[in-house]
Image (tube, rainbow, N blue to C red; front, side, top):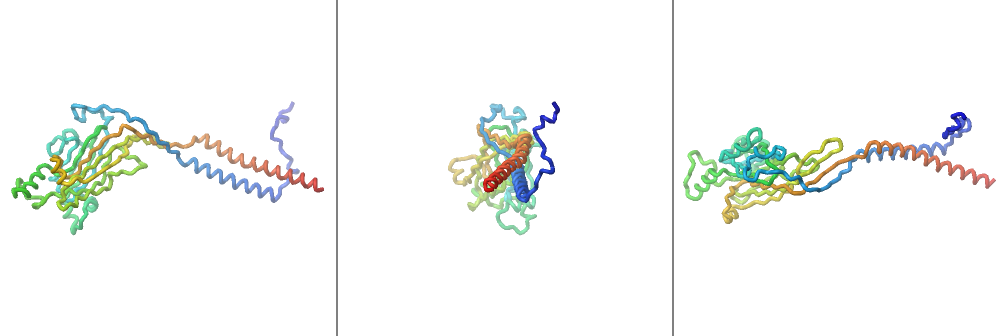
Length: 338
């Protein structure tokens, strides 16, 4: 038996084929429909499907009695990037600390060695213009009276504190002059007989890698001490949510989302509570026990390809069946009328 007898796709003879205007219109309509469905399928394939899920965060070991960062696994540390400008506070009157290790006592540099450390410098013109809230005549002269703290340190993935404030020596000197008229310093009074103005501008404070789809609430924030004296404490509480961010063709990335609450503590409140905190910025941070997984996925390309083939073939087959039914119906009606 010859092989041609098994041919399921019998070909009509060219001479018997008949082309018509209605057939051309139907073919054009089918082509347009197939093209629109084809484009819509491509658009759906390009768009990513985002899935969110929550789970318990991974527990990390921490040094209970010895807080030295050298005793904490490097894999359980994250970078803390800081960029803050105090436009009215000279660098020699500025102090900073992390978990009680301050720069004025020398402990900060002991636990945070280069290249992971902070640096105090005179604000740039751009930094000063963002930080200054009142008018100034000569920015190059005015910015020399301020200070910018910038740098990156490594902190363990446990709760902690970081403060940027007036140094204890500068605070004692300023309060001594105002209270008793006695200048305890040897050099010229940098505050000219007034209390230090700790108004500051937070350019950026970032924990770990930022979460790309979200925004950083600790970026571009002004803390203006408008109580007349310029003395107050900006108390900022940060809740960090560990977030795994996975894009379609990239590997998973460990990031952190921040939830921030802030308020200004007036000096009267500090005095009433007998607080030892100095005016400036106090940042308290902690990590939530729940973590978020953010996954962006796309349909498998084999499924996408089979969908395209099915759309194009299905449109023409469906149109062929419908047009065949219409033609046969029209022929049947014409025979009955005859």
